[in-house]
Image (cartoon, rainbow, N blue to C red; front, side, top):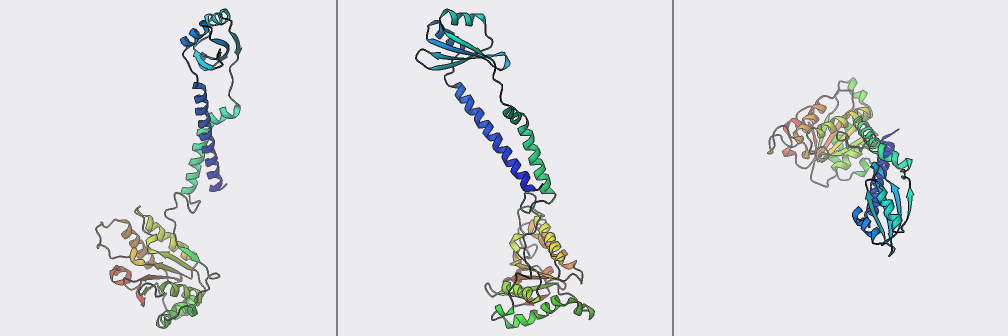
Length: 327
């Protein structure tokens, strides 16, 4: 059974409980219509304004009395017990009456009233427990899941022919394509994987298109994400998303991770008003650790785009991280 089944069960249980509550309230509203006091009812009987009565046993030793007046109105009252005086008053005043046994609720309503809340709590508990264990990508406990969108080599048809006016930039990144196509050739000669490439340029100059074209030329998966997707109000969520993104990329290696607008998360540390434990700096620290922890045989290249390289943290630009720049 999956999370979708549990969620449907929980929703139906909630609907059933709501309907049951509404019907009970409606029934109470109908029952309270025409309600009068017991002494007032006796007064109406003695004044011969009651023509028929139905006596029915209720819960807790009480007796429900439904009476029809001479002007054809229905009134209701409740007695704690049915004494002989009441029956005698009805007989003496010529009131027709009938005595009915207590009406038992249906088995379904009884079962729903007694077990419905318990089943609802169990269903909700199981649903959230499965969410915590990783089931359901969009669940309540999937904050740490990466929002990177993967474009596999079969669906990525973008090549260098689609990128116009960037001849110098294409020449600079051609070796990335060669490395992704045949990394063993470079590793035999002692070549090391280019871990990070920073694409710098004004908005609309084709940085994202160039990164996608590199993946299309090399026929490798392309993971794309925006820098703002890492930053959340909860501290630690962005770092968890960085870890999850790199784990997914390592499984699909060789591949390219493209982070658009990296300045949203890679801004110089200590420049803001927050302390050193805020969400953005935690995310940046995790990205630095992941990039620096790559092995030479993983085949994962991180590309990032920005139009503000001057505000990036120096740790991002040191050798071993985004030490290559293409403008």
